[in-house]
Image 1 (cartoon, one colour):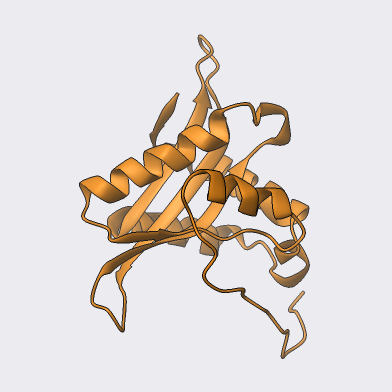
Image 2 (cartoon, helix red, strand yellow):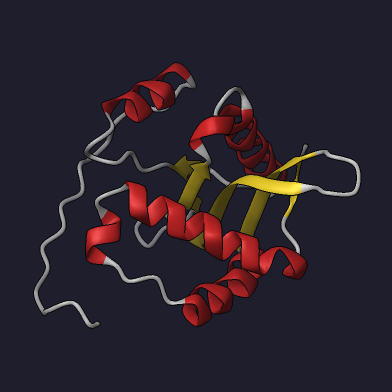
Length: 153
């Protein structure tokens, strides 16, 4: 089941974000700070959306995936842009759940007047880019990151 995240999901969202960071190059760059992640959930839900994929188990629902989209007006075009902040589904549940989260985010974007949705593909996973292309996304630019200061402990 795909649904909008609620404050009650906060701890599981943190755990999913930690799994995302551990599995990607961002985990080597960004420390997970639970308080900062929790502080991000409310503004994203106010100026965007967080959807979760939940296993519909009687008496024991479990979150196994999420997608977070922030929304802002594009500085050059004045159009509403949605930017993916995180899209993660636990590996053992990547059947159709990831695609369902993406499709729900796209539908939400249409409902809320977004002109574009920008998704990010990890450099170490070219299959994600191919997935986006199968869903009608086109590559526009490549992002590069350089660490300028030592990572805080």
